[in-house]
Image (tube, rainbow, N blue to C red; front, side, top):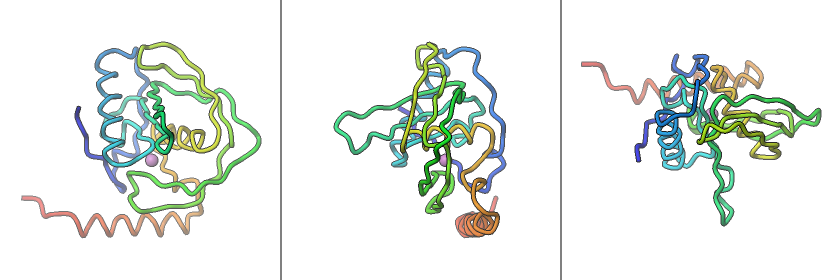
Length: 174
Ligand code: NI
């Protein structure tokens, strides 16, 4: 088990466009496992590879934490193949934007095609929180944070706040 630190904004590593994996092999499976460990350790419900400094198109989600049977998904090269016209608004947060929340509107349901841990092609139709979470994590693979879906006024406020927190916590380089 390896818990990797989650990168917080502002950071150029959160702005990268990730590369598709060729195959889900041991190296990708190790990344998925580390990401799950890191996500659970941070009390998150989703995590994308660039948040732990990896540029592969991999996400992990688990929106079942209150239920008896936990259910996580590890997805490589996730693609949205269908979304509903109907939308859903949810107050989103992000491990890379600690303590910051804002209402984001996205399609209420989405069908996702991806490669699972065994390199099998799968499709999942998600709704509710799971749909929100998968779409949010997929955005990270293209360098998009949830604040890019809100007004620039609110976004600038959040980003200024984060930059300030970062300055306060930064130790001088030696
Ligand atoms: Ni996020």
